[in-house]
Length: 372
Image (cartoon, rainbow, N blue to C red; front, side, top):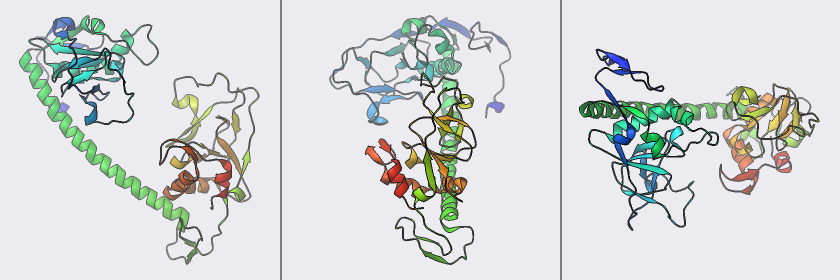
């Protein structure tokens, strides 16, 4: 798609650190001469408009209603009109920049900008999002807390931005709408294929860990309602006869910190995260050794249960087990992460919340009662 685009005849340096070269005939201008900061009063009929990180600016009810902090008094809110360029002052670094598709009202942290003659709001929304993706907006936010900005209109207005001819701005917007539409359709199709493959994967895992690999083997009732039949030569045991909890704690906190990740298992924290651990000290964290079994009790219902191949430390809230006798921790891991076992663990978990969300904990006494 991009490879089919022909380059312009001549280019020149833009003088903008985040941009590079621009077409020779393009101008550049400070954003404050292209946009007017609006401060409209709120009308009685105005509903809340939200600026999302994916660049959509729309009425909150058009996307979702949960997960927001609801204001009891809309003090300081401002009017937003369809076609306004909206820049989230505290979240612009993450791409919360776009053109509103609705009339409504928004928080005072939004920069609501009306384009002047010669400025296409949709073009500049895409451009400022590029400033975000290049981390230029984040670089401008000196003295602000980590992973946030205070990108006010004054800061935005002082930035020089390219100024293509209006007809080119409009053509670029049309091309991006077409190209993004094609890509979104391709992404949706791929996601459907991925979902189907994941279902197939889960079905294969479930059949292997509950029926074995020989489809002709005689079966017998397991006596467990959620499990059904199992191979005739298999036994059924409670988990407490397969795993023994151990609680060995670090006295120095110098061992490497490990992290449980849903799709990677137990990994070294330093290899997957650039931020420091939240805990001030690792003294008192649980020691894990290769061959032991680790359960994130808050995420057991989501399958965050893995055998360890590493030595290190995990959160004191995790449960660490030694296998008993001939119990195979790799097999148990596959079994415990299967769909029906995850559902069983969720049913046995206690706390606040329902389904796959909420503060649910799988206590060891409930884990031990679950049948193999």
